[in-house]
Length: 279
Image 1: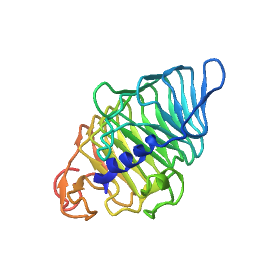
Image 2: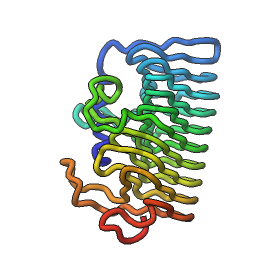
Image 3: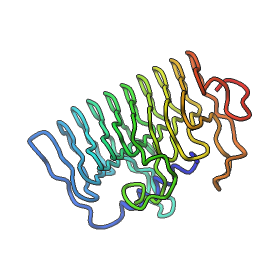
């Protein structure tokens, strides 16, 4: 199921052309609070950022947050512009730099990533999901660690009828794709449709434990370079291969093994079916 994730983002971003987007409002001299529906966060420098609605980083320019970003319970922050091949819309070149942590609270969604030249997304601290509905990253530099605990939509692939995933007409998921992560990646207790840790450079350990995903090929851990250990325990399923079909068929699959400098522990010792070779 991992192969269709970019399509979901393109569908979501096609909504950027809708009318009715409103400007977010400042809250305090240096800090910024974004609320409302399809509210844009304009380019500029802020002390901190609090997201309380469905908010989008403006697709051009630079947004610099000196301290933390908090995506409040049930809120959505989109900072991801892959373009839309259906309309010919090009990838955006928004640059987002966060000097502190990014915290995604209960039921909230973060989508952040780089597409196209001139794009730079940097989180100097940690990326923390505390009961988040979903966290979706692409080509983002995270200098600290990724820590995602609990959250999701209850371990189902049923099409949601509301919220962010209802808006993009796609089952819930989290994925870390093509990121450069200085510390550890820990995903613990996520329950949704699909989870991916794919094509990342990780300076510490990758620990994926106690995750219950409804999709047949979750959890996918593909083609990462991990300087520490890879630990997978008590997950519904783990794979180091990706399906070749665009129609949702589980097989055939192509192996995408990981490079692990430390130890492989638990479900990630040997490759997923046919089960030979290192995971």
